Image (tube, rainbow, N blue to C red; front, side, top):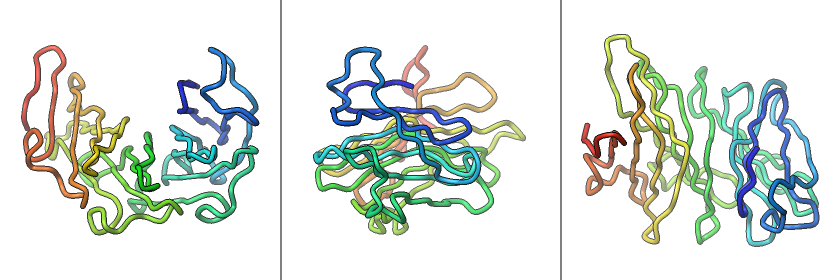
Length: 226
């Protein structure tokens, strides 16, 4: 578990154990201080939070997974440490972006208008795991103006002769013009490369960025294109 500034990151194992400050903001904690702990479950199997962001009112939005990684989950915790029942369904919003396959959220950022941009991973048919980028309204509903569905699945590696194809997003940011930048890594049975994708505000890949919206960086050599 890592606490830095106003972001709280918890890796869940057998239950969703969410650590947060009760009665004080996270950025008021001393180094190494954890604060109080609230525990609640998003599913009947393994579930947990990967990232969190504070709202201006002090409530906390958590992003992670449920059903042992089969679903993506958002949750809102009120300043007192209780699950906010006005958010999603009983405080939780559970999404299955790929029926019968896994998906989960790894990062979240609050936009200036109150919406949320998130990213993570999704199991792709024949392509291992792909970047999952989603945008939500303030009430946890998917924002259908983003790629027509609220989420986008992006693949770096589409073939590999049976190789393990891995594209995973671990960080997300929103530019002042509304474009979303998602970063993580890509690998094909070899060394991992830094992977960065930029989306237009409507969810389409930004063709002005990298090669077709994607940038592949071998940190030991430099930027490359697909």
